Length: 222
Image (cartoon, rainbow, N blue to C red; front, side, top):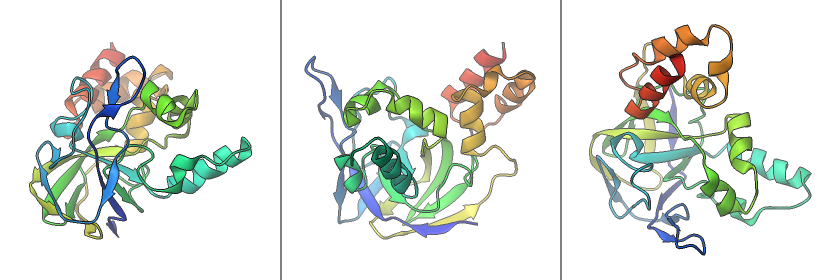
């Protein structure tokens, strides 16, 4: 069972993102106070495009702190240091913490964070906004290739959450559908492998998986 803590708690509102008027809340800022966590996310935290972001299955975006040294090394190999990686929040996460890696977490795992109870709902599918945020063409593709996607919690019990609070796993899902495995199958091209249809049909029945990803599994299986 996993026991860790919140390194940084980050909250954001939509800000101008591109010259065409596109907005984004990806640039979140760390807070040093308790924040109420409701069914749709942290109080004061917003999304710019509710058609694809936010909702009960994407209430809290978390990103493993362990990935930052890997991204720093990646950019160093390209010959530069990316300034966004100097602090947590580069990937738009609400919670930065160690130990919440995609290989460890299963869909449906439950965690007590502060006074709230949350459940792993899905991984984070990157899009063009990540490339634009970093000013690096192809970064979203690299996230897909490496599987360093992070994920989302849904909120089972609302309550206050503060920086430094324990993140304690209180229930482990009774299956082997980790975020990493689901992400590879649905996003990383695994659905194209021979025999993937059976896995996709099985995944589509996983009730704790976010509804949009269950629907994706059904479409890919057909």
